[in-house]
Length: 136
Image 1 (cartoon, rainbow, N blue to C red):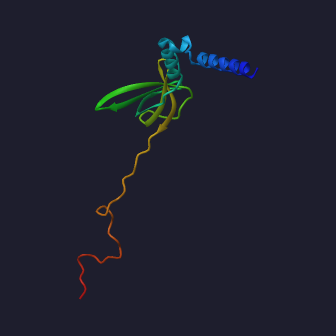
Image 2 (image 1 turned 180 degrees about the vertical axis):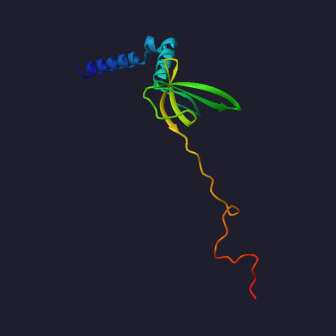
Image 3 (image 1 turned 60 degrees about the horizontal axis):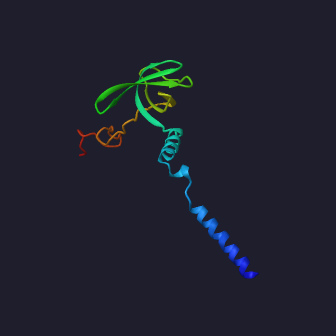
C-alpha cells in the first residue's frame, strides 16, 4: 500500500512539473510581446523642458522663441490653465506631448542672476587715507 501511494504521488508531481515548464502560446509570440512593450511605453508621460522668450500668450496658447545650436525656433504650447506671463518674459516651460500637441504643465519665469562685485569694482574704504596726502 505504501509503495502504491508513493508511486502515485511521484507520478502526479512529475506531471505537474512538466505541465508548468510548457510555455503558453501567447508568451512565445513576438507580436504580443512587442505590443505589450509599446503599450507600456505609450502610457508613460515623458516630461520635456524648453526655455525661451514669450512671443505670444493667450488663455489657451503660448508661443516662445528659443535658440538651439545657434538656430532660432518657435514652439507653441497648449495651456490647461491661464498663466501670468507677458510678452518678452523669459520662461522655462515643462511640457508633455499629448495627442500630437505640446501641453504645458508648468510655466515659470526665469530670473536674471545678478553679478557679484569683484575687488576691482568695489569703492575704496573711507578709513584709508587719500593717496595725495602724506604724513609729515
